[in-house]
Amino acid sequence: MLWERGLLTQDAAVVGEPSELQVGLAERGGAWFTATAYGKAAHGSQPHRGVNAITSMARFLLRLPEVLPDREHPLVGRPTVNAALISGGSAPNVVPDRCEVDIDRRIVPGETDPDEVRAPFLALARSLRADHPEVEIEVTLREWTDAAEASADTDIARVAVDAVEASTGVRPELVGFTGITDARFYINEAHIPTVICGPGSLTVAHTADESVAVDELVAGARAYARMFAAFLA
Image (cartoon, rainbow, N blue to C red):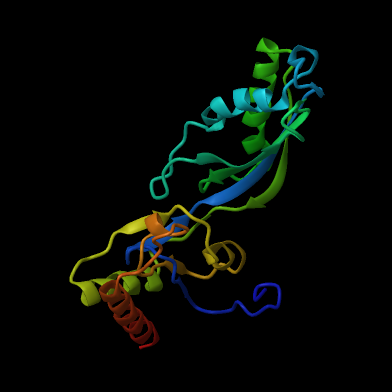
């Protein structure tokens, strides 16, 4: 990485993620958890002799929104949680003794403690077990990515707003970016004034219709040129 090689020494940075040419100053981070439900295998014709791990996990997932704290960031909004990948069972005629789910928990600036973010998952597992003693679920943290937030009171932020307005005729808003970008390295590690700004919309990212309108692409190119010229003047 450039940061690890000591090459992030710039005066400012522009991260060209799809922000609809709004000027992003903050982004969410991420905590990826793996939840594993343990059961007891049995013959499919005698399910009462086993413990169905998939059923236990279903109980867990139906209450997953409960793990979110009651907090909201002014730019990136509220934290989110998404059950992203699931696997379980070994054969159609066997009661599954294991079910595993990868969970994407997006964090907002101010959430900095992985144990604090994980705690509600553990509390939910305990609550389920109190009502259903057969439920056994463990939750482990796979990966943690810090959220990031930059100041609006920087030269690059002012230059970016003016450049987009000159290129589009509309003054952009200062916004937050719900995804995770390389801006976190510039902001958190290198302490470089940074904005997130680019053509395209995150609403179509990672979808079958992912695209950028040509006119917005042209406007973005013009905005970048104005940013560079103004910042270096």
